[in-house]
Image (cartoon, rainbow, N blue to C red; front, side, top):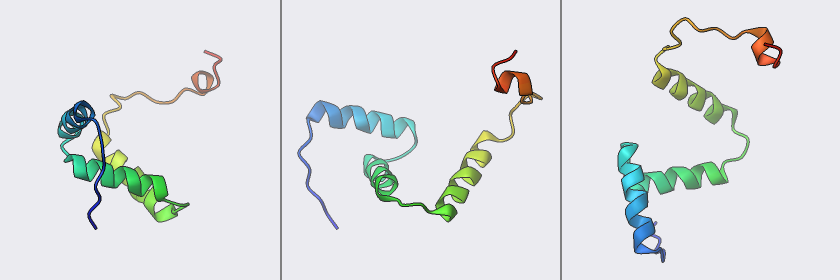
Length: 75
């Protein structure tokens, strides 16, 4: 489906730069935003997002671990 929008040219240019910095097209960025906006509770989507974020992180914790005191603001 095609959709026509009226958006300020400066906004579009800035959004294209931001999308390019993320390795995406503006079209893809808008589509993903609309999908998130309209998503209902979808456990499978949540699991996929966690897996994606985990893969992107590539396990670079550098040995850091959560500290119970820090988590509860006691450190």
